[in-house]
Image (cartoon, rainbow, N blue to C red; front, side, top):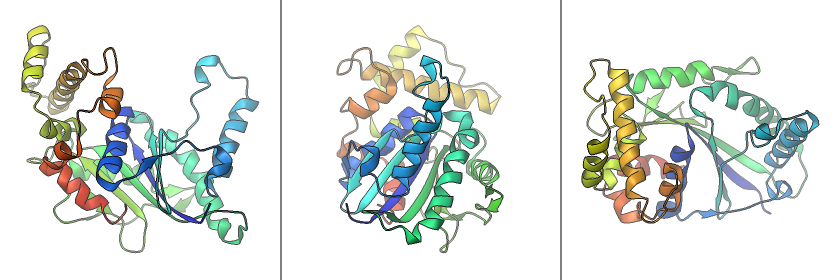
Length: 281
């Protein structure tokens, strides 16, 4: 395998990871790959193998056997490798930091590596919801979580916005990026707002409203935003039951066939995402 450029994307949950993977497949023509550890370029081959070895050395419960921090999705295009991780909601710092500590040490020392393949360039992209707090506070939380790695300053600069998108970078000399999921018309919301722009969920929203109550007008913005996201998730899950009966939302987003390339680009918010991702893809 030749040397590669790697893009690591850290997502909040499994459906965020599925939507991101789908975007790279449908829009940028990436292909899914199933690789053995030895087939990854350095330093990922070393990190993934060591992660599993360390955990296996412990006396794990069976339900912990799948808790290694490994990518949910692996995709490739030409000499570009895409790794999409799911960090599990509020556990972002605790989940991602140990991985970054190992990765950055090995990558810095990897210039002398003489194996078959290595990642010559690694870019990092953090995905996060604006929720009720807005883009700037969401970015501030990312900065706080990763201001330093192994006591070495890492995310330290002001975030610079890419025009006409909800994407940000740490400047031209850094390879660290962030994208904030939000409603295209105002500075709050979640990934579900983008999906709702792509698909006509009106009849399915009406169906879930018939059976459930949603506290979407609560004066507490945090509560109202969370309830709106739950309502959209319920409607999307219902819509996908014909093609994927009994499946979760992440499976429906990933395999349900609802989000075609045409539907993705019909959304103003997704077009902005595509514009941001194009230089990285």
